[in-house]
Length: 428
Image 1 (spheres, one colour):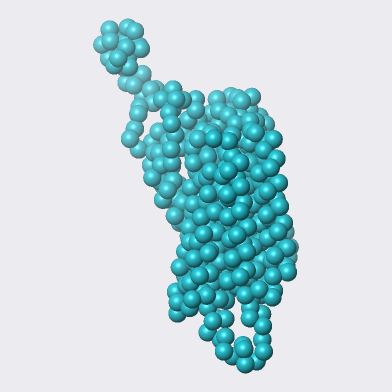
Image 2 (cartoon, rainbow, N blue to C red; image 1 turned 135 degrees about the horizontal axis):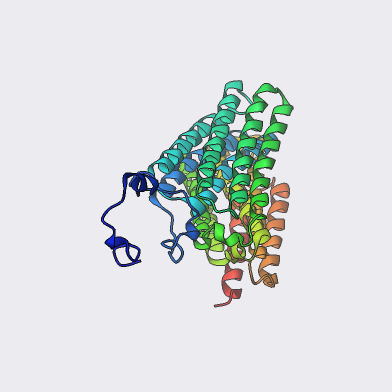
């Protein structure tokens, strides 16, 4: 082709006939082919970064994570923890599956934008209903309908991509579309079931959705053609920041209701130090090379982040509970002393598990994710993370005699020691 995009000899033709013009797909500012980005010449060598629409999309998940955190904050016990972890999975999966679609097929035309904006509206509906799941029938219906609608929207995007898919990509696209469509149908069918059977169908729907990408990738000779590694690593890092932001917000929210009691302020400050260690450990010492090692490592890497995100979110709730407990302990210290109640005796097990257990879950997550990456012989760092996680779990169980400030201090000391160890032992 010449500089004007014409094939040799095309300039010699006087014009196209009406039939010829109608048979050529004309470019449009509003509708573009939904083709695999890595197969398009203009995208092959690009340094892919998150788009403004993706960042807008992330904001809706801030609301959803905050709603999940409020639920755990209001019910920091075994039931509340299981509910938090169970509902965190569909929220995380909704973000993840749209992210992987975007890295493969995002063409930024009007139909794609409208579809993603509709999915964002559904996520806001999901966030509005998530706190009532398990307690209100209407909330469960809203949760199911909004979640299933997101799945149908994504299935529609894959079906649209099927039009431009090459023969060796069609099975990949079909598996994704079928997995999301079937998963949505299972979720909707759960509305006909009451009691634990409904949640069993939710689990089945999620299982179908989680298996679909694995089956889809197995149809490709080279799975790396379906995503941009740097874009995926950046997107996961941004979601880490989103969830970590909830922890920082918890520090401020917890302090605001304590009349600035000294113990509460110190506990909040230590909570921020713990959040800084979590940030430092992830962005300095958790790699992303596992994405390109092969299909199985890529799935381990991607799915393993569920523990990372859920752990950080739980840690944020635990921080707020610790700050509030420290403030309440300071306000009632005189009454506690008069009654002979040990200081910190009202710092409940659930609050301790949210804090120390959340950090432990995060450490297990980054240990697993980083184990998938190249350099798996980094045994000292892996052992240090697992050892710190084990210490924190033991602290959560045996820490009832400790007041919140002392408990938070031990959590922070453990994280500071781990961060310092990894910083010193990491190769330059």
